Length: 457
Image 1 (tube, rainbow, N blue to C red):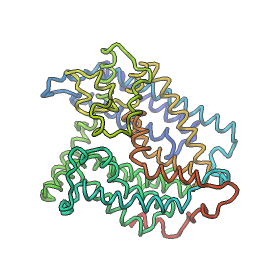
Image 2: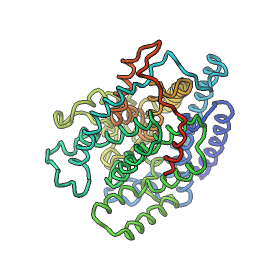
Image 3: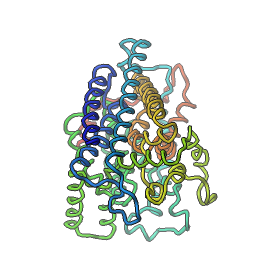
Image 4: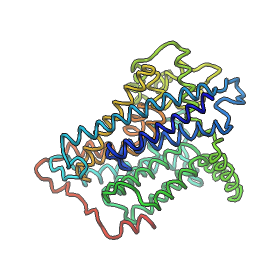
């Protein structure tokens, strides 16, 4: 009964916040408010409804003695997520009002931004020439690339180092940067399709497929100055969302040479579990609820200290085996009945905020994160498409799902680390930009006749 009431309240709050965002926050598909509202519906609302319909909760039937998350814990977590949604909605409305007061009607328009640093074509090609070969070699040597296994190198622990993992994506990131600058040209899209196919069969790290696709979607909308994607893109996005869940299993089966019929059968079964709400990947709300209970049981808040491990991020674990984990606080609050850290579970942005300052953390931190993301959005959209600021915003925006799912730590990991070549392009373009006219930074024509055809190809 408690969960039933929580779900009804959640649905009413979601509808009210959606109306407020549409009417007062000047949202678009690129706005962080749209991204979070979809995240809340898909992760929190739909999961709570699935539990009401009989889906088992996290740790039900656990072989390691885990205590199942109760419906009361789910209901309380849903209430906390609603507090976060309300706080973020108010922040997005306030950010829109502040931007409108400061810039008037120009607040929702794109201006040239002549004083803003522009992307440098020269820098773009220099970074690409350095990063792409490194990425290709890393993928061949350390990735799952079939017959190229002849070239594998055994470096011991370094084979599974995050450094070797990150560099495997560099070739794809270079393609994304070139697509951003030159548009959806066939000479860029064909290798991009090949790269995504290779990433899809790796059998792990599904974000290496999903985030590039989100990036391409946001680049398309940004280049075309569209607020919302066309319907055919929405349909493709829904199909990709369904394929996301069995992607790891598909990758492993492809590597093992399983028949296509078997792969299709397993994928269909997993997608059926998703549509019925029984997939383990849909238990993010449960993991948030478990985080809240563990924090309460620990009788402590972290007040920002849980971000300290970011200071040791550049140091390879091979040099410092006992260095603090990025989710060190999860290791500290986990116990045998709720082994979240050992199982690699997520806390969500709200769970991380709760670990910082409890309910106050969810309300306050959610507000400030939402407010400054919106300020970032309005400034970037007002700037030139070829500005460094817009380029950086698209990088951040495509990673917001990870931030909302994993916490603010992911903003550093997925933007600065996993998209390092794009960050270097942005930094060097800013450093080399000469205000008052720089011919080497002249933008490439956006509205070319065959971009849309290349995208559909």
